[in-house]
Image (cartoon, rainbow, N blue to C red):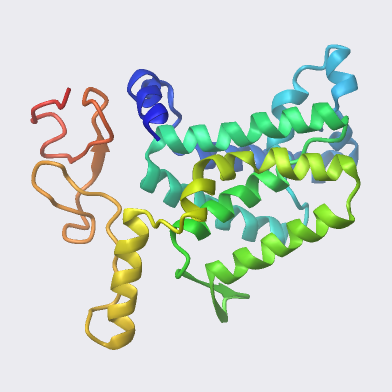
Length: 266
């Protein structure tokens, strides 16, 4: 990730904090338009390369805000899920790297849709977010229908099986769309995954989880924020807010007491 670190030092000020919140607000707006104006709104904003070449360039952006479902129950469930996943990835990677991951997925989806002349969809972008979260936190449990506990890694296996099935039975356009759209995941995780190397966050989480199962540790509480000066975290001090310093050379985070009172790392 050295290349990303260099980009972050130079362009981090342009990163969008709480990116998933804005994406989901856009989803909600399109969801309301769909139910107020009818399905006719969909053909006007979906990614269509032919229409884009004729001047309808807004489609390059608007397709990102089209929900994967227009059922209100599943829309609310999906919005909550992906807001949570996006927030956790942003906390873990930092705002800039999460922006790169998401927008790289968008650009690759645009490229795949343009190449295959097929409608662009955020389905594979959202899947790449879910796979990224499952890779970082495989032992976190989700509750299916708010009742059945299932580890996120098993849900990821189901998603991968779905992708493989779609790749096998789908046509050439589907194959190209799947491969290109998920390149952002492969670029971020492919080599470390093949080498079975865990990130620091994974090792910390899995160690506490094993101790918890043996009864030798308190319930798992993973800290995503830590002050570089005093070492405080949101676990040890839940009332404290944390911020990244834009002047430090690297991904350094500080509590509110030290964000303006520390020696910048250059």
